[in-house]
Image: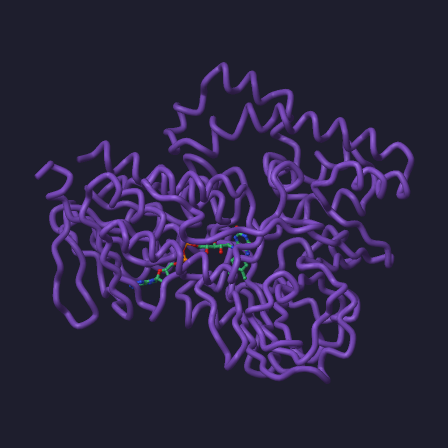
Length: 499
Ligand SMILES: Cc1cc2nc3c(=O)[nH]c(=O)nc-3n(C[C@H](O)[C@H](O)[C@H](O)COP(=O)(O)OP(=O)(O)OC[C@H]3O[C@@H](n4cnc5c(N)ncnc54)[C@H](O)[C@@H]3O)c2cc1C
């Protein structure tokens, strides 16, 4: 038996980060066990069924499919034996405040034709932007996103700094896009994804322009059977690699003695020994709830967590309906005039927008009809809302906000939705706290401003406790499936170095 095969590793949480780490470690020969509080794998992407309708709960946008192929290949498996992905066309339709619309698409000629109709010089500006991003991707992906985080000094490498300067990393995402396009519609269409990193485009670092670039370059995809099926596929792959997944097994505490991780303690009180523990539960929730007070890193006391910046939350409607909106695309975003405001509460989502919020609707049944009975479909509606550090009384607001949002779905072409609803489930910020154990219901984790990135994000390898590791959206390089898969790769590198 090799050294690794005698090492037991426990992973707390079967979110995408936990599952990907389990697959990688099991392939290297470690004995891996996952303890998951819920009754199924996937964390925020676990999804649910309501009668004959199936819903994804969290992610709906799959970018950079090669990362999934790499994960399976690095684990000695073939992705296509577990799941297949379908490419979407268009990637996303954006409907603007002035009733115009733009289809973001990887068909660059078709995209430039739309831009020409907006303003004749925009196609050439887009070409310059796209070509800059081919170079920006080469200079930054492997150096920053695709490698384990370093110390602050580790980032002061002259060659990397010189390579980064032409891309003006000091600009905000808004400034960056404005420099190329000087049209607020195109600027916000390309920079709106920053909301999903917890920030307004005027506050988000311009490095994140890589996200819209990657969507143009590699497309936007949908896992067949939905993201809940992707979670199940990763769970099956982990099991095939020998990982034991314990569902409905909430852990009470990570068991740590004399600065050394010893294993975990389950809610019932029994302890299970391990050589290392990887925590995939939401970082701030886990620091507050499953780490013994005595070993808490001084950087993450309750007071310090209160001063850190967390993302917005989301109001969700999952609707099973007795019709299909055949002509409407899979992903649509309504961008309201309010996105252009530069003051609170629009800048920081500190109050509920009850007049004109931006929102997103996913219409998955057209490409994935198996999620609803014939002729029926499901709709997934997401509205950015304040996290629970801002006071919204959801007890009294939930019903009226639901009615308000349903009445605004026509802005994306979903007419008369109310008449066709067969089943519905609604989440508020409180649902994310209570059912998913997400700190403040901040579903996109810690915001991605410079002082919470790279060496300033929570560490993957604990600084003060041996053999304790963190993986998921709160650690380097950040929230979102692309970066979470990278964090799993980095966690595996650290663990394998330490044994
Ligand atoms: C509404 C929404 C839309 C999103 N859209 C996208 C998108 O389109 N594209 C994209 O890339 N990303 C998207 N994201 C982000 C992405 O889904 C999340 O960042 C990601 O799922 C988080 O994964 P994770 O590995 O950090 O763990 P999580 O998904 O948070 O899973 C953590 C797991 O730990 C478990 N756990 C917690 N405490 C315990 C305990 N004490 N004992 C045992 N288990 C425990 C939880 O039950 C959970 O299963 C979206 C997220 C949300 C919520």
